[in-house]
Length: 497
Image (cartoon, rainbow, N blue to C red; front, side, top):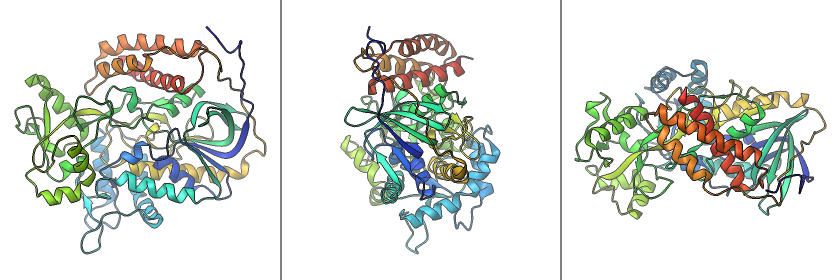
Protein backbone atom coordinates (compact mmCIF):
# COMPACT_ATOMS: atom_id res chain seq x y z
CA UNK A 1 0.00 0.00 0.00
CA UNK A 2 1.27 3.50 -0.81
CA UNK A 3 1.84 5.92 2.05
CA UNK A 4 3.18 9.35 2.85
CA UNK A 5 6.82 8.19 2.91
CA UNK A 6 6.63 7.35 -0.79
CA UNK A 7 5.10 10.67 -1.72
CA UNK A 8 5.31 13.28 1.06
CA UNK A 9 3.24 15.88 -0.80
CA UNK A 10 3.46 18.38 2.04
CA UNK A 11 1.09 21.34 1.49
CA UNK A 12 3.21 24.45 0.96
CA UNK A 13 0.60 26.94 -0.26
CA UNK A 14 -0.57 28.98 2.78
CA UNK A 15 -2.87 31.92 3.52
CA UNK A 16 -3.56 33.75 6.78
CA UNK A 17 -6.82 35.04 8.23
CA UNK A 18 -7.93 36.48 11.54
CA UNK A 19 -10.93 34.15 11.66
CA UNK A 20 -11.78 30.96 9.79
CA UNK A 21 -15.43 29.90 9.81
CA UNK A 22 -16.14 26.35 8.66
CA UNK A 23 -19.73 26.25 7.46
CA UNK A 24 -21.98 28.52 5.44
CA UNK A 25 -25.33 27.98 7.17
CA UNK A 26 -27.17 30.36 9.46
CA UNK A 27 -24.66 30.06 12.33
CA UNK A 28 -21.55 30.65 10.24
CA UNK A 29 -23.04 33.52 8.24
CA UNK A 30 -24.48 35.30 11.28
CA UNK A 31 -21.13 35.02 13.06
CA UNK A 32 -19.45 36.75 10.11
CA UNK A 33 -22.03 39.53 10.16
CA UNK A 34 -21.42 40.16 13.85
CA UNK A 35 -17.62 40.07 13.72
CA UNK A 36 -15.70 43.40 13.51
CA UNK A 37 -15.45 44.76 9.99
CA UNK A 38 -11.67 45.14 10.26
CA UNK A 39 -11.09 41.42 10.75
CA UNK A 40 -10.02 39.31 7.78
CA UNK A 41 -12.49 36.40 7.63
CA UNK A 42 -12.57 33.20 5.60
CA UNK A 43 -15.78 31.16 5.30
CA UNK A 44 -15.40 27.61 4.02
CA UNK A 45 -18.37 26.04 2.25
CA UNK A 46 -18.01 22.29 1.53
CA UNK A 47 -20.35 22.27 -1.45
CA UNK A 48 -22.41 24.94 -3.25
CA UNK A 49 -23.54 27.90 -1.15
CA UNK A 50 -27.19 26.82 -1.18
CA UNK A 51 -26.54 23.37 0.32
CA UNK A 52 -26.84 23.34 4.10
CA UNK A 53 -29.27 22.15 6.75
CA UNK A 54 -30.30 25.75 7.52
CA UNK A 55 -31.71 26.04 4.01
CA UNK A 56 -33.95 23.02 4.66
CA UNK A 57 -35.58 24.33 7.86
CA UNK A 58 -39.27 24.64 7.10
CA UNK A 59 -41.34 25.43 10.18
CA UNK A 60 -39.81 28.65 11.42
CA UNK A 61 -37.86 30.29 14.21
CA UNK A 62 -39.23 30.42 17.75
CA UNK A 63 -39.01 33.55 19.87
CA UNK A 64 -40.85 35.99 22.10
CA UNK A 65 -40.81 39.29 20.20
CA UNK A 66 -43.52 41.94 20.53
CA UNK A 67 -45.79 39.18 21.81
CA UNK A 68 -48.64 40.46 24.01
CA UNK A 69 -49.78 37.04 25.28
CA UNK A 70 -46.42 35.24 25.44
CA UNK A 71 -43.31 35.71 27.59
CA UNK A 72 -39.81 34.28 27.93
CA UNK A 73 -40.76 32.24 31.00
CA UNK A 74 -43.31 30.31 28.93
CA UNK A 75 -40.73 29.74 26.19
CA UNK A 76 -38.15 28.62 28.75
CA UNK A 77 -40.57 26.18 30.37
CA UNK A 78 -41.59 24.68 27.03
CA UNK A 79 -37.92 24.23 26.09
CA UNK A 80 -37.09 22.52 29.38
CA UNK A 81 -40.14 20.25 29.16
CA UNK A 82 -39.32 19.16 25.61
CA UNK A 83 -35.70 18.56 26.61
CA UNK A 84 -36.61 16.24 29.47
CA UNK A 85 -35.20 18.81 31.92
CA UNK A 86 -31.69 17.75 30.89
CA UNK A 87 -31.06 21.24 29.51
CA UNK A 88 -28.49 23.77 30.68
CA UNK A 89 -30.92 26.22 32.30
CA UNK A 90 -28.57 29.20 32.02
CA UNK A 91 -28.10 28.56 28.30
CA UNK A 92 -31.86 28.24 27.82
CA UNK A 93 -32.41 31.54 29.60
CA UNK A 94 -29.86 33.15 27.29
CA UNK A 95 -31.63 31.67 24.27
CA UNK A 96 -35.17 32.81 25.12
CA UNK A 97 -34.28 36.19 26.63
CA UNK A 98 -32.11 37.26 23.67
CA UNK A 99 -34.42 35.98 20.95
CA UNK A 100 -36.04 39.36 20.44
CA UNK A 101 -32.81 41.20 19.62
CA UNK A 102 -31.74 38.65 17.00
CA UNK A 103 -35.20 38.45 15.46
CA UNK A 104 -35.20 42.22 15.19
CA UNK A 105 -31.69 42.20 13.74
CA UNK A 106 -32.44 39.71 10.96
CA UNK A 107 -35.64 41.58 10.13
CA UNK A 108 -33.47 44.71 9.74
CA UNK A 109 -31.16 42.68 7.49
CA UNK A 110 -34.13 41.93 5.23
CA UNK A 111 -35.70 38.66 6.42
CA UNK A 112 -39.36 38.65 5.39
CA UNK A 113 -41.63 36.90 7.89
CA UNK A 114 -45.30 36.31 7.06
CA UNK A 115 -47.77 38.87 8.39
CA UNK A 116 -51.46 39.01 9.23
CA UNK A 117 -53.82 41.29 7.29
CA UNK A 118 -53.43 43.94 10.03
CA UNK A 119 -49.65 44.04 9.54
CA UNK A 120 -48.67 42.14 12.68
CA UNK A 121 -46.43 39.09 12.37
CA UNK A 122 -48.18 35.77 11.95
CA UNK A 123 -47.01 33.28 14.56
CA UNK A 124 -47.81 29.62 14.23
CA UNK A 125 -47.89 26.74 16.72
CA UNK A 126 -45.76 23.61 16.75
CA UNK A 127 -45.42 20.51 18.91
CA UNK A 128 -44.30 21.22 22.48
CA UNK A 129 -45.13 24.94 22.34
CA UNK A 130 -47.84 26.32 24.61
CA UNK A 131 -48.13 29.58 22.65
CA UNK A 132 -48.08 30.72 19.03
CA UNK A 133 -44.47 31.97 18.83
CA UNK A 134 -43.11 30.56 15.57
CA UNK A 135 -42.15 33.27 13.06
CA UNK A 136 -42.10 31.88 9.54
CA UNK A 137 -41.84 32.59 5.83
CA UNK A 138 -44.53 30.21 4.48
CA UNK A 139 -42.91 26.79 4.91
CA UNK A 140 -39.41 27.80 3.77
CA UNK A 141 -38.18 29.87 6.71
CA UNK A 142 -34.66 28.47 6.75
CA UNK A 143 -34.16 29.30 3.10
CA UNK A 144 -35.43 32.86 3.65
CA UNK A 145 -33.16 33.47 6.63
CA UNK A 146 -30.06 31.81 5.19
CA UNK A 147 -30.41 33.44 1.76
CA UNK A 148 -30.80 36.86 3.36
CA UNK A 149 -27.79 36.34 5.62
CA UNK A 150 -25.71 35.14 2.66
CA UNK A 151 -26.60 38.23 0.62
CA UNK A 152 -25.46 40.43 3.51
CA UNK A 153 -22.21 38.52 3.99
CA UNK A 154 -21.39 38.60 0.27
CA UNK A 155 -21.50 42.39 0.50
CA UNK A 156 -18.84 42.49 3.24
CA UNK A 157 -15.41 43.43 1.84
CA UNK A 158 -13.55 41.72 4.73
CA UNK A 159 -15.08 38.27 4.10
CA UNK A 160 -13.83 35.68 1.61
CA UNK A 161 -16.12 32.73 0.85
CA UNK A 162 -14.61 29.59 -0.65
CA UNK A 163 -17.32 27.26 -1.94
CA UNK A 164 -16.80 23.66 -3.05
CA UNK A 165 -13.91 23.60 -0.61
CA UNK A 166 -13.45 20.77 1.87
CA UNK A 167 -11.67 21.15 5.19
CA UNK A 168 -9.65 17.94 5.35
CA UNK A 169 -7.93 18.38 8.73
CA UNK A 170 -7.36 20.94 11.46
CA UNK A 171 -4.61 21.42 14.02
CA UNK A 172 -4.05 23.73 16.96
CA UNK A 173 -0.90 25.85 16.71
CA UNK A 174 0.94 28.27 18.98
CA UNK A 175 -0.85 31.21 17.31
CA UNK A 176 -4.29 29.69 16.78
CA UNK A 177 -5.32 27.05 14.24
CA UNK A 178 -4.39 25.67 10.84
CA UNK A 179 -6.66 23.89 8.40
CA UNK A 180 -5.83 21.81 5.35
CA UNK A 181 -8.27 22.72 2.58
CA UNK A 182 -8.94 20.92 -0.68
CA UNK A 183 -10.02 23.55 -3.18
CA UNK A 184 -12.53 23.17 -5.98
CA UNK A 185 -9.75 22.56 -8.52
CA UNK A 186 -8.33 19.67 -6.48
CA UNK A 187 -5.33 21.57 -5.12
CA UNK A 188 -4.52 21.89 -1.43
CA UNK A 189 -4.08 24.95 0.76
CA UNK A 190 -3.10 25.51 4.38
CA UNK A 191 -5.18 28.28 5.95
CA UNK A 192 -4.07 29.71 9.28
CA UNK A 193 -6.01 31.80 11.77
CA UNK A 194 -6.04 33.14 15.30
CA UNK A 195 -9.68 32.17 15.86
CA UNK A 196 -11.68 29.30 14.40
CA UNK A 197 -15.45 28.84 14.38
CA UNK A 198 -16.81 25.40 13.53
CA UNK A 199 -20.36 25.73 12.18
CA UNK A 200 -20.46 22.55 10.15
CA UNK A 201 -24.01 21.43 10.90
CA UNK A 202 -25.34 18.02 11.81
CA UNK A 203 -24.59 14.33 11.41
CA UNK A 204 -27.55 13.07 9.38
CA UNK A 205 -25.47 11.24 6.79
CA UNK A 206 -24.23 8.91 9.53
CA UNK A 207 -27.68 7.26 9.22
CA UNK A 208 -29.23 5.30 6.36
CA UNK A 209 -32.18 7.70 6.27
CA UNK A 210 -32.15 11.37 7.24
CA UNK A 211 -33.82 14.68 6.53
CA UNK A 212 -30.38 16.31 6.37
CA UNK A 213 -28.54 17.55 3.30
CA UNK A 214 -25.51 15.79 1.83
CA UNK A 215 -23.05 17.96 3.77
CA UNK A 216 -24.18 16.71 7.20
CA UNK A 217 -21.37 14.26 7.92
CA UNK A 218 -20.13 15.57 11.27
CA UNK A 219 -16.84 16.98 9.98
CA UNK A 220 -16.51 19.77 12.55
CA UNK A 221 -17.21 17.40 15.42
CA UNK A 222 -14.54 15.05 14.09
CA UNK A 223 -11.94 17.82 13.77
CA UNK A 224 -12.67 19.08 17.28
CA UNK A 225 -12.49 15.54 18.68
CA UNK A 226 -9.17 14.89 16.96
CA UNK A 227 -7.75 18.13 18.37
CA UNK A 228 -8.81 17.15 21.90
CA UNK A 229 -11.93 19.26 22.44
CA UNK A 230 -14.65 17.77 24.64
CA UNK A 231 -17.59 16.19 22.80
CA UNK A 232 -20.76 15.83 24.86
CA UNK A 233 -24.04 13.90 24.50
CA UNK A 234 -23.48 12.89 20.90
CA UNK A 235 -26.02 10.11 21.38
CA UNK A 236 -28.73 12.76 21.88
CA UNK A 237 -30.13 12.33 18.38
CA UNK A 238 -33.58 13.59 17.43
CA UNK A 239 -35.77 11.57 15.09
CA UNK A 240 -38.45 13.64 13.40
CA UNK A 241 -41.77 11.76 13.44
CA UNK A 242 -43.08 12.99 10.09
CA UNK A 243 -40.55 12.45 7.34
CA UNK A 244 -42.10 11.54 3.99
CA UNK A 245 -41.82 7.78 3.65
CA UNK A 246 -41.22 6.76 0.05
CA UNK A 247 -38.93 3.88 1.15
CA UNK A 248 -36.49 4.75 -1.60
CA UNK A 249 -34.21 7.73 -0.96
CA UNK A 250 -31.57 8.26 1.72
CA UNK A 251 -32.54 11.92 2.08
CA UNK A 252 -36.14 11.94 3.28
CA UNK A 253 -38.27 14.99 2.62
CA UNK A 254 -39.41 16.56 5.89
CA UNK A 255 -43.06 17.37 6.49
CA UNK A 256 -42.86 20.22 8.94
CA UNK A 257 -44.06 20.17 12.52
CA UNK A 258 -46.16 23.16 11.51
CA UNK A 259 -48.51 20.87 9.55
CA UNK A 260 -49.49 19.21 12.82
CA UNK A 261 -49.59 22.68 14.34
CA UNK A 262 -52.32 23.53 11.84
CA UNK A 263 -54.33 20.45 12.80
CA UNK A 264 -52.99 17.40 10.93
CA UNK A 265 -53.79 13.97 12.36
CA UNK A 266 -51.43 11.01 12.70
CA UNK A 267 -52.91 7.73 11.47
CA UNK A 268 -51.73 4.13 11.80
CA UNK A 269 -51.89 1.41 9.12
CA UNK A 270 -55.63 1.10 9.72
CA UNK A 271 -56.03 4.85 9.04
CA UNK A 272 -56.97 5.35 12.71
CA UNK A 273 -55.71 8.07 15.06
CA UNK A 274 -53.61 6.58 17.86
CA UNK A 275 -51.77 9.35 19.76
CA UNK A 276 -54.46 9.39 22.47
CA UNK A 277 -53.12 6.01 23.58
CA UNK A 278 -49.67 7.48 24.24
CA UNK A 279 -49.86 11.14 25.26
CA UNK A 280 -52.58 13.61 26.23
CA UNK A 281 -51.03 16.25 23.98
CA UNK A 282 -51.90 14.04 21.01
CA UNK A 283 -50.27 15.13 17.71
CA UNK A 284 -48.75 18.20 19.38
CA UNK A 285 -46.59 16.25 21.82
CA UNK A 286 -42.82 16.87 21.45
CA UNK A 287 -41.00 15.09 18.65
CA UNK A 288 -39.38 12.36 20.73
CA UNK A 289 -42.73 11.45 22.29
CA UNK A 290 -44.43 11.20 18.90
CA UNK A 291 -41.57 9.20 17.36
CA UNK A 292 -41.61 6.76 20.29
CA UNK A 293 -45.38 6.42 19.96
CA UNK A 294 -45.09 5.59 16.25
CA UNK A 295 -42.47 2.91 16.92
CA UNK A 296 -44.52 1.35 19.72
CA UNK A 297 -47.67 1.44 17.57
CA UNK A 298 -45.66 -0.08 14.72
CA UNK A 299 -44.59 -2.96 16.94
CA UNK A 300 -48.13 -3.42 18.23
CA UNK A 301 -49.63 -3.68 14.74
CA UNK A 302 -46.66 -5.23 12.96
CA UNK A 303 -46.63 -2.51 10.30
CA UNK A 304 -44.51 0.49 9.37
CA UNK A 305 -47.35 2.12 7.43
CA UNK A 306 -48.23 5.48 9.01
CA UNK A 307 -49.86 8.59 7.63
CA UNK A 308 -50.28 12.32 8.20
CA UNK A 309 -53.70 13.65 7.26
CA UNK A 310 -54.77 17.28 6.97
CA UNK A 311 -57.00 16.81 3.92
CA UNK A 312 -60.06 17.92 5.87
CA UNK A 313 -58.75 21.51 5.88
CA UNK A 314 -59.49 24.06 3.16
CA UNK A 315 -57.41 23.28 0.08
CA UNK A 316 -56.51 26.90 -0.73
CA UNK A 317 -55.40 27.49 2.84
CA UNK A 318 -53.06 24.47 2.72
CA UNK A 319 -51.59 25.45 -0.64
CA UNK A 320 -50.86 28.98 0.59
CA UNK A 321 -49.62 27.95 4.05
CA UNK A 322 -47.41 25.07 2.85
CA UNK A 323 -46.52 25.81 -0.78
CA UNK A 324 -43.16 24.00 -0.75
CA UNK A 325 -44.47 20.92 1.07
CA UNK A 326 -47.54 20.81 -1.18
CA UNK A 327 -45.46 20.99 -4.36
CA UNK A 328 -42.84 18.47 -3.23
CA UNK A 329 -45.50 15.96 -2.23
CA UNK A 330 -47.36 16.52 -5.49
CA UNK A 331 -44.20 15.57 -7.36
CA UNK A 332 -44.18 12.32 -5.38
CA UNK A 333 -47.78 11.60 -6.34
CA UNK A 334 -49.51 12.80 -3.18
CA UNK A 335 -51.96 15.70 -2.95
CA UNK A 336 -51.83 16.99 0.63
CA UNK A 337 -55.30 18.49 0.22
CA UNK A 338 -56.98 15.24 -0.85
CA UNK A 339 -55.49 12.25 0.97
CA UNK A 340 -53.21 11.13 3.81
CA UNK A 341 -49.45 11.19 3.19
CA UNK A 342 -47.14 8.29 4.20
CA UNK A 343 -44.70 9.20 6.97
CA UNK A 344 -42.27 7.51 9.36
CA UNK A 345 -39.66 8.74 11.88
CA UNK A 346 -36.29 9.65 10.45
CA UNK A 347 -32.99 11.04 11.77
CA UNK A 348 -33.33 14.80 11.88
CA UNK A 349 -31.24 16.70 14.42
CA UNK A 350 -28.35 16.44 16.86
CA UNK A 351 -28.65 17.88 20.38
CA UNK A 352 -25.12 16.93 21.45
CA UNK A 353 -21.85 17.97 19.87
CA UNK A 354 -18.76 20.04 20.57
CA UNK A 355 -19.22 21.13 24.18
CA UNK A 356 -19.17 24.93 24.46
CA UNK A 357 -19.71 27.60 27.10
CA UNK A 358 -22.04 30.60 26.91
CA UNK A 359 -19.59 32.29 24.52
CA UNK A 360 -19.74 29.25 22.21
CA UNK A 361 -16.11 28.52 23.04
CA UNK A 362 -15.03 24.90 23.19
CA UNK A 363 -12.66 23.45 25.78
CA UNK A 364 -9.83 24.56 23.45
CA UNK A 365 -8.89 28.24 23.64
CA UNK A 366 -10.20 30.31 20.70
CA UNK A 367 -11.90 27.32 19.09
CA UNK A 368 -15.62 28.07 18.86
CA UNK A 369 -18.56 25.96 17.71
CA UNK A 370 -22.02 27.22 16.72
CA UNK A 371 -25.23 25.73 15.42
CA UNK A 372 -26.00 22.03 15.25
CA UNK A 373 -22.41 20.81 15.62
CA UNK A 374 -22.21 22.48 19.05
CA UNK A 375 -23.52 21.39 22.43
CA UNK A 376 -24.73 24.52 24.21
CA UNK A 377 -27.08 22.48 26.37
CA UNK A 378 -30.17 24.44 25.36
CA UNK A 379 -31.96 21.44 23.85
CA UNK A 380 -31.49 18.87 26.61
CA UNK A 381 -32.29 15.38 25.33
CA UNK A 382 -34.82 16.58 22.74
CA UNK A 383 -34.98 19.85 20.80
CA UNK A 384 -38.14 21.92 20.97
CA UNK A 385 -39.41 22.64 17.46
CA UNK A 386 -38.00 25.81 15.81
CA UNK A 387 -35.40 26.46 18.51
CA UNK A 388 -32.56 25.43 16.19
CA UNK A 389 -32.41 28.53 13.99
CA UNK A 390 -32.70 30.66 17.12
CA UNK A 391 -29.80 28.85 18.77
CA UNK A 392 -27.71 29.33 15.63
CA UNK A 393 -28.23 33.09 15.74
CA UNK A 394 -27.94 33.76 19.47
CA UNK A 395 -24.82 31.71 20.13
CA UNK A 396 -22.97 32.58 16.93
CA UNK A 397 -23.40 36.22 17.94
CA UNK A 398 -21.90 35.34 21.33
CA UNK A 399 -18.93 33.73 19.58
CA UNK A 400 -18.43 36.81 17.42
CA UNK A 401 -18.60 39.12 20.43
CA UNK A 402 -16.08 37.01 22.35
CA UNK A 403 -13.67 37.01 19.41
CA UNK A 404 -14.07 40.78 19.03
CA UNK A 405 -13.17 41.25 22.70
CA UNK A 406 -9.94 39.27 22.21
CA UNK A 407 -8.91 40.62 18.81
CA UNK A 408 -6.40 43.09 20.22
CA UNK A 409 -4.63 40.30 22.09
CA UNK A 410 -4.07 38.16 18.99
CA UNK A 411 -0.43 37.69 17.94
CA UNK A 412 0.82 39.43 14.82
CA UNK A 413 2.27 36.29 13.25
CA UNK A 414 0.77 32.98 12.15
CA UNK A 415 2.21 29.53 12.68
CA UNK A 416 1.36 27.09 9.90
CA UNK A 417 0.85 23.45 10.80
CA UNK A 418 2.21 20.76 8.50
CA UNK A 419 -0.23 18.61 6.51
CA UNK A 420 0.30 15.68 4.15
CA UNK A 421 -2.64 14.75 1.86
CA UNK A 422 -0.81 11.55 0.78
CA UNK A 423 -1.11 12.41 -2.89
CA UNK A 424 -0.59 9.28 -4.97
CA UNK A 425 -1.54 6.92 -2.14
CA UNK A 426 -4.32 4.34 -2.30
CA UNK A 427 -7.90 5.49 -1.92
CA UNK A 428 -10.09 4.04 0.82
CA UNK A 429 -11.92 0.72 0.27
CA UNK A 430 -15.50 1.00 -0.94
CA UNK A 431 -18.45 0.38 1.36
CA UNK A 432 -17.18 1.96 4.58
CA UNK A 433 -19.89 4.60 4.80
CA UNK A 434 -22.65 2.16 3.82
CA UNK A 435 -21.64 -0.36 6.48
CA UNK A 436 -21.34 2.30 9.17
CA UNK A 437 -24.75 3.76 8.37
CA UNK A 438 -26.38 0.35 8.59
CA UNK A 439 -24.78 -0.30 11.98
CA UNK A 440 -25.98 2.99 13.45
CA UNK A 441 -29.48 2.70 11.94
CA UNK A 442 -29.85 -0.67 13.66
CA UNK A 443 -28.29 0.21 17.00
CA UNK A 444 -29.52 3.74 17.66
CA UNK A 445 -32.84 4.53 16.02
CA UNK A 446 -35.57 6.06 18.23
CA UNK A 447 -35.35 3.27 20.84
CA UNK A 448 -31.66 2.28 21.24
CA UNK A 449 -30.50 -1.36 21.14
CA UNK A 450 -27.61 -1.69 23.61
CA UNK A 451 -26.52 -5.12 22.40
CA UNK A 452 -26.41 -3.97 18.79
CA UNK A 453 -24.58 -0.83 19.93
CA UNK A 454 -21.91 -2.86 21.73
CA UNK A 455 -21.38 -5.12 18.71
CA UNK A 456 -21.45 -2.19 16.31
CA UNK A 457 -18.98 -0.23 18.42
CA UNK A 458 -16.31 -2.92 18.06
CA UNK A 459 -16.72 -3.04 14.29
CA UNK A 460 -16.75 0.74 13.86
CA UNK A 461 -13.69 1.02 16.11
CA UNK A 462 -11.90 -1.44 13.81
CA UNK A 463 -12.92 0.53 10.70
CA UNK A 464 -11.77 3.81 12.25
CA UNK A 465 -8.37 2.43 13.24
CA UNK A 466 -7.91 1.22 9.68
CA UNK A 467 -8.70 4.66 8.28
CA UNK A 468 -6.33 6.43 10.67
CA UNK A 469 -3.39 4.11 10.10
CA UNK A 470 -3.88 3.26 6.42
CA UNK A 471 -1.97 6.15 4.87
CA UNK A 472 -4.82 6.73 2.41
CA UNK A 473 -5.08 9.58 -0.06
CA UNK A 474 -6.87 12.45 1.69
CA UNK A 475 -9.58 13.07 -0.88
CA UNK A 476 -13.26 13.95 -0.20
CA UNK A 477 -14.20 10.27 0.13
CA UNK A 478 -11.61 9.78 2.85
CA UNK A 479 -12.61 12.92 4.76
CA UNK A 480 -16.33 12.14 4.74
CA UNK A 481 -15.83 8.47 5.60
CA UNK A 482 -13.55 9.32 8.51
CA UNK A 483 -16.07 11.84 9.83
CA UNK A 484 -19.00 9.42 9.57
CA UNK A 485 -17.05 6.61 11.21
CA UNK A 486 -15.74 8.87 14.00
CA UNK A 487 -19.20 10.20 14.82
CA UNK A 488 -20.63 6.66 14.86
CA UNK A 489 -17.73 5.55 17.07
CA UNK A 490 -18.47 8.26 19.65
CA UNK A 491 -22.26 7.70 19.59
CA UNK A 492 -22.02 3.92 19.95
CA UNK A 493 -19.47 4.32 22.71
CA UNK A 494 -21.99 6.37 24.67
CA UNK A 495 -24.94 4.08 23.92
CA UNK A 496 -23.23 0.80 24.80
CA UNK A 497 -22.33 2.12 28.26
